[in-house]
Image (cartoon, rainbow, N blue to C red; front, side, top):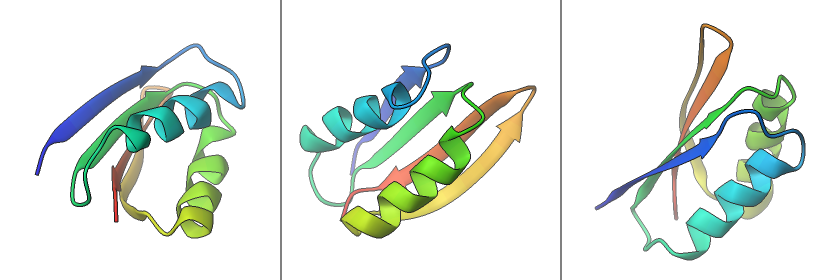
Length: 74
């Protein structure tokens, strides 16, 4: 299992989700993608994206205006 970091800071919708999608395409099942984004809409977007794609949202937190999502590819 690998961990892939994605820096989507300063990108606006749909930028962070597009970067997550592209990172996910290059990952194997079980890999974890860590996305950092500053777009306030990212929180809802990543939750919806995981539900729609079947990938698992392991954690979602906010630290100093940065949203950090941990997504496990299924």
